Image (tube, rainbow, N blue to C red):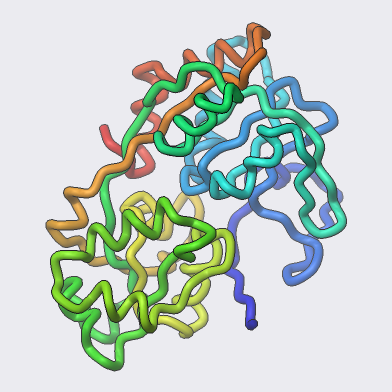
Length: 283
């Protein structure tokens, strides 16, 4: 299977002078920070990765000191081993740390709660639905989900087996178009494990023509804070705007330290809500 990547900007490691940066081999985007020095350890639903550097900066400002944080931005199923106390391997790197804070979708969080792995989860924000991400200039003239039925249109989407939550959400947004679900199930190009990295790369490299993605992804690809030139354009449609997902936070079971609790409370604050809104989440 071919693999593709994008020129993703770095966050936590960008100020470190000694860089081992070799795309295709020694580069990791969804593990952030220094696990050996971390005071605060967080695992989270990966599609909010663009928000976290500013969120942590404002959290440190509220505390009046810099906080050393290590955080993981992956689909929930990928970071589940860490919550359960099992190691997670990324190439030759093996992580055995235990997170203090868990952030994820309600269904996932309820399963963790039933297993006694987390404390009571609380919703801290919602997304703003689903859009169609297309190449710059929208060369195939895609105006809405109906156009995805055109035989020449190649659709990319998250993997239905490894990223069930996002796959179901995207199908829900497109389900009003007769025959489109069947085309996606039959023909769509899928990522393997991490759709927020894989699916946009498929469009960027010309392997797909369109992808249903969360609105805040589309905003991110055009955000001058991250990219000097927009990567993609996007098409909004009414059914996509009506699909809204919640994001929840909880302390891991047994966590009683003050710092994780203060971060959890900060995430539930109006200041954190404003930060998320600035990246395309619900205001």
